[in-house]
View 1 (tube, rainbow, N blue to C red):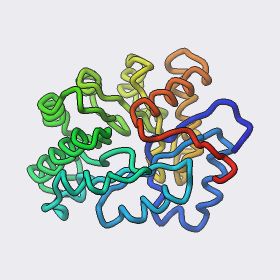
View 2 (cartoon, rainbow, N blue to C red):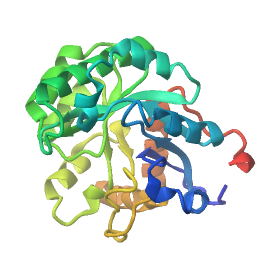
View 3 (cartoon, rainbow, N blue to C red):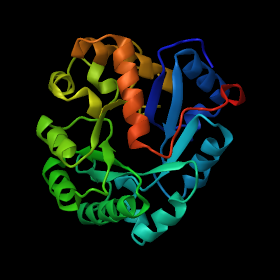
View 4 (cartoon, rainbow, N blue to C red):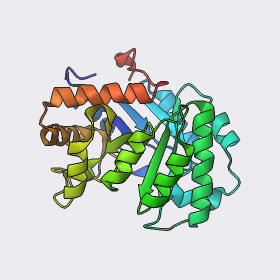
Length: 270
């Protein structure tokens, strides 16, 4: 592990994607050098889950999730909460998702997206694991479904936040967190920046969503977990706090939300 004392968590990345396979070890090394202590690699379909889980099993500082992305909802018509709960019964699986609603691309039927999302919400409650939520151009239905599902047993995060402040506040009222990606550093993201500045520090996370959405000054490059440091630095400046305070808060928030995850016990084994 790096001697960097400001430790960060990349709360959402896709390390199983082919784009990382040629230099995977170098990607992890650069993350370590940047102070990234822990990474959460995300499941997007049940077909790719074994590969996602294998990465987490091979590295003590990487955890994973199981879920069906809204783009994949049509091809997972028969998947129910019980299937997700069974797959989540593994020490390295710390969350349910990525799931949610995407009305921008509409790659799956909206009704099926809602049904699939509802099963994930049930699975999150039954497994007592947080749900990782993708929401794009679906604020009204997302807020409604979260409010309907809200209970002491539901925790989760709106990942790669690009929606309205109203949805962010509704999610927080339902006990969820909000995660910011490199998008918050983009010059055309003024509304997202205002929301990030306004939200309480104890309810935000940072992520890369790698390999997508590299932050400024890396925009245009393949994103990777080490780049989360740029997003964290931007958020710290936006909120008028130092980088160490932002890093410590988002790290604490991550381990509080993803209670099955833990800081690496043996960094030498990474």
